Amino acid sequence: MWGVTLTPTSALAKANDVGCAVPGIGRFKEVNVDEELSGLLRDYRSGRLSRRDFVQRGVAMGMTVSVLGMILHNAGPVRAAMAHSVSGARKGGTLRVAVVPPSTPLDPALIGDVATILVGDNIYNFLVRLDHNLIPYPDLATKWSVSKDGQVWTFPLHKNVKFHSGKPFTADDVLFTVQRTLNPKTGSPVANLFAGISKMVKLDDYTVQFTLKAPNPDFPVNFADYHMCILENNFSGNFSTKPSGTGPFMLKEYVPADHATLVRNPSYFENGYPYLDAIKLVFLPDVSTQIAALKSGTVDAMTNVTPAQAQPLMNVSGITALPLGTTGFNNLRMRADKKPFNDPRVRMAFKLVTDRKAINAAVLRGVGTVGDDHPISPAYGEWYTNIGTRQLDIPKAKALLAQAGYPKGLSVTLTTQVAYGGSDFAVAFQQLAAAANINVNIVLDGGGSYFNTDWLTVPLGITSWGARPVPNTILQQLFVTGQPYNEAHYSNKHLDALIAAAGSELNPSKRKGLYKQIETLISEDGPSIIPIFTTFIFPFSNKVKGYQPIPNTFQYYKSVWLSA
Image 1: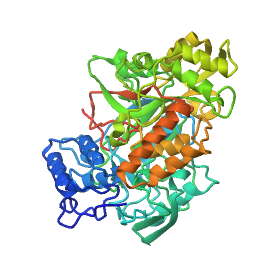
Image 2: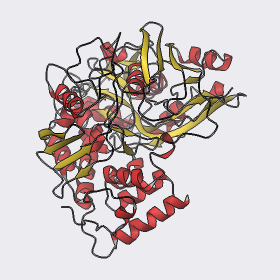
Image 3: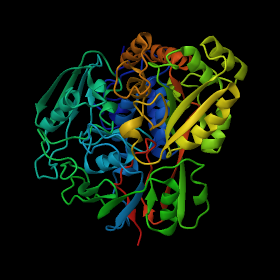
Image 4: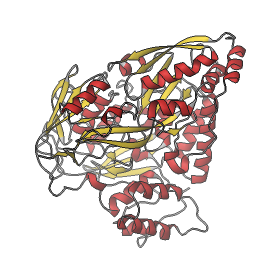
């Protein structure tokens, strides 16, 4: 239930009229929500409270990230540092970024690696984006509002926006993008995020409205998924040679084996942006080669590396190596539909040989947050429950393997990316598993083909998952039966029902209870070993200004500029 609707004299109205009821607050018998929210806004505006702290406090009050994002958008500073022209910012120059080569198409519905996502993030706009704190804010939308029952969401749109082709942007383009995502022929892996829509209409040329089958307090966040680039209505061109977005940059050249060049959009609708003349993505498969390029000045920035990989950049003159904690993680997943991992005793044995502190030390130099084999990290605040950290137990692991028919142990092949800590994780796990007579043969995918050929098929693999702003997004993609990104091919109907219930539950205490059940079920029965939540290092030259890394690892360079 909604519980509270703030009046026109409330804190929300003082934040320039969000224009909606407040979903997910629930009933507060002893807390004056309006007064507490007003206090949070005062602290935020005065600088005593960061955006991230504001959201964490708001979530603890029972508010949703979607509502808090709109409050911050209207309260100011609008869109944080991502939407204000910077005094003294210099126009011009080409930002050169080292990135692992692409392995997936440039069709936004099918992109799936850092390179193609970087292209999409910068040549397209979204209905909603995430800022550097993973807080949603309106992008092509100007705001959003929701009905009191949580099922009707309305998005007014920016006017005077043009696609790179010159075609005006309207509500038809938003509806086409969502319809294309839902069309089974498209093959979009995020169609399930929008399967709850019962009706979508344009109220006029610059307003779209979605009616849902059930409440979804996180609905605006779905539009910030990297697949949801807003496309031209009925676009039939070539995404790799002449895509047409509305974003601050346009694709000039794409050579998958070497580079991609993006150039300034002279007709971009946000005045003053972008600062850069161009972005050149330099495709380099090896992290050590990327580091050497940054140190030599051949490139200006890298995307993200682990603390272990970043050691050669520490204390290097002229280079900033910025650490950023995330809700992302490396997922060591076991194919639950094939032997030996279709036996939950084998899955648990593999979890019991995992020394989480040792892996944290090997992959993240000990700075990561220890996990317990489910994807809801402490960074999610109110939705996280400490169910206890599973301890190393080699005797029990051996006993479980014997019960499953492997009294002498077994041999497995582990396939992983080299980048993002995958190889360090694999080697650490290989050494740990040997104590339980598990022989692990490691296959390193050093190029960009992991997301093209391996991650959805191999029996045992390590995949780097970027941060998501709300738990339900990752839960739907990674664990729901039959979903395209369910890389473990895991199926648990009870879990499916819990995830669906959590996604539509508006009462905060009930939702937290559902998340606790989900965390416990996945940790005990699930196909994932998630020993740590990632802290990434974002390295860049000191001449790169205005850059605020985003924890989902997919970067937006609209506000970046280069010093002389």
